[in-house]
Image (cartoon, rainbow, N blue to C red; front, side, top):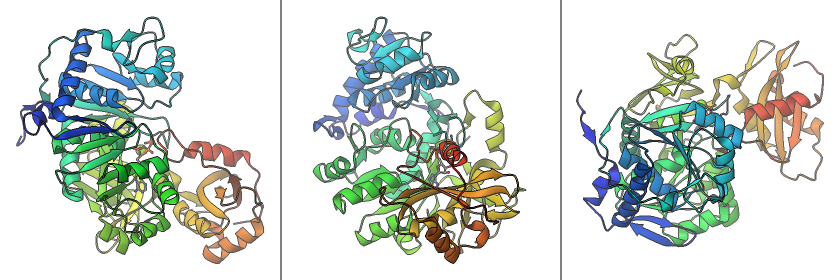
Length: 509
Ligand code: ATP
Ligand code: MG
């Protein structure tokens, strides 16, 4: 064991080095805190949690709007050696209840806007509010006299976070992320994106995801500033980048598209726009190139503490569609169905191993054994490397459509549909079909919702660009694509919509 021993939470280390550096700016008000100031708020929160009996090894649930209180809780958990379990504030009480049970949560922290959800979700664990409680039995955190605490010592193998996956392919799973996973990810990320003491990272993604909570965890390690928003709105986020001289931001493609739509371009204070979570369209990357937006397309997942591979703007602009090369400390293989590595240019399942890969799903040995194999983590994603070693992610393994014995890559069909002028966006998947096994089917967002879709013209367009068996048999317009709470396409909901819809043509593939 080369790297062993323990460490304290990074904020307590940071206070010993650059206490007067700015730690946090809350964008809606402009209020800000130095690391020293944040540290004293955090030690108060940690002391209050300790006074409530919360101790190292406990699982602390949080269902709360993003804000300073949330940041205090994140670092207080680190101070106490507590595993943080952040939950989406958009979940229903039933969903929260389910997650509390899966994750063995010992106490749940909420705020004004989430208190009723929290109360409805649980009768078994104490509910603590960072605001003035309105319900009987809810503990008012600020009324608790702090107990004095000393910073906990973390082993690299201790679980820092339990993060739920987005639930795109099924029910969300609770991913264990250790101190070692998060540290390796932070180091590898800074190697790829660069690090400057003046960096200011805008957090506008939800905090129950690595994309949102990750920068907050890394800030005391890097000594850089977080600019925190109270949620996402395209114009507001774009404006905050200019207003606070933001140098970095993590976004998903729909957010970036909306930011560019609303403001044309983004402030040139930006050094890094980390774009991930879902495939970015070629058009979006080209827009970034045309407007000199320093985009770093990235591929990652909860199970790897986020980034697995990340492209630099140079790679992104010269090889449109790539997510670049693997990060430090991970190995990435592309394998066929029997696990043998494939040649460059050939698509296969992406398998990842290394220091950022989680030890598994909490309390779910079966799902863990399925995905976390001796050869590495089976991501369930299909991709290929080009001759230069650049990675491209095509789609998920489960999404591959087999119709009449032919393999169809839904991504290719989406690409063609998006080029059709009347269509803004599309999801393509296979709907069971008694004769063909699966039927290629598409849910499409029209560029003009008032307009009727001319299906035969679309069919002719698709036939020009796609082999006959790939042409969608069923095309269903919608106002908006159904999404999960984390903003990824909710494929299950798409499937249900398409299954309920009538086929356009009964023609054979
Ligand atoms: P679940 O595992 O519950 O089905 P999920 O996989 O959507 O949900 P996340 O961990 O939030 O949950 O998302 C990771 C997934 O997002 C990846 O496995 C991949 O399918 C997709 N993804 C992330 N980045 C990209 C990208 N740049 N291009 C294509 N797909 C991406
Ligand atoms: Mg997943």
